[in-house]
Length: 235
Image (cartoon, rainbow, N blue to C red; front, side):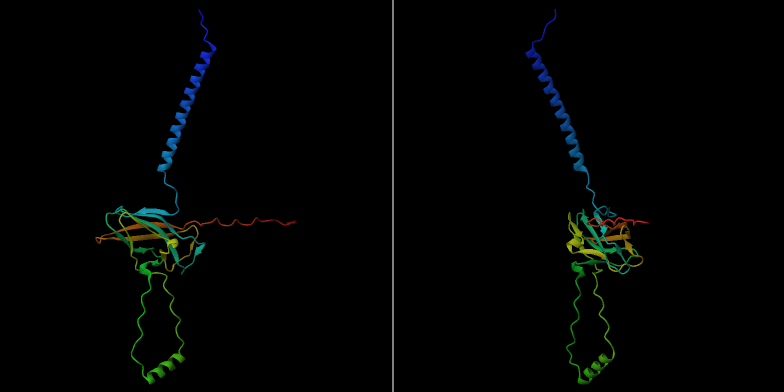
């Protein structure tokens, strides 16, 4: 005997099936979304510059770059920007930076970069004859031009607190720099070779970070596109 399912019951069964299917779809979508959020949360955002850590693994260097320029010619000042993190259980100081044969690295804008006080003038009065002879010799020989002011100080002492970091960049007004670039010019896309950072802990022990190549950063705004070459009639 064939039994006929009433139309009302068929509609109820169909609605239940649709609801179950919709619930399953929502569950699958929720699972995919959670996976994407977790994956994104563990990804590290790309940042310009290079990263490295000290030989003992306690000091971390991030975003190490040479400030952008079309070219640094020999004798130019080459700014270096870095972020330094201290994961040790004691304070540490950045006490020296070298850049191979590229030139002397100095600290610009820091407390160590302050100019040394000039020596006070002599208080002993000069005799009249001494003053006259000094004036005569001064009038005969031209005075030497003043020496150029130093860019910064080679005596570097930047403290990094326990669990803290320091940012050395032109935006913070305290940064590192090769004072006078020697050798060939450093052009856009090139790197500063063999840069070594030396750190001294509070207990007197030291560690280093060596970066084989410190890259030049990219310009903040895109470079202008070259004008299209327009041909002339008859060419």
